[in-house]
Length: 141
Image 1: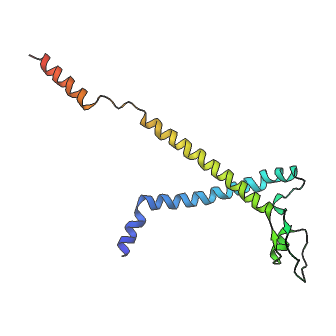
Image 2: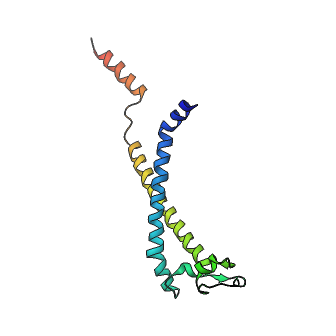
């Protein structure tokens, strides 16, 4: 069983997948930073606040003994209040759209490169080669 596992791990597909997951996780961190640190502050500024992820609606009463800031999404959520964090959802949605678009661009570019390699002329067909050989043999004495 260990030998089968070793053969499975040594396959190129598994190693490629492992590398892809690691790079994908690092790339997701970059996209999260791009969204959270660059794009969303601009969007938040346009909508009147600097932290768009802090837009929320309190759906129920604030728990008794709450000692945090009642205007803080993080504090209310940590206290267990029923909070609809629509601003955080919009942030995550924009994060996803950026990541999906960048992946689309990478796949689109890879497909173009692969197609470019396929566009090389294939050369003569087998029938054309056989015709040339026959004609050459007829010309010889």
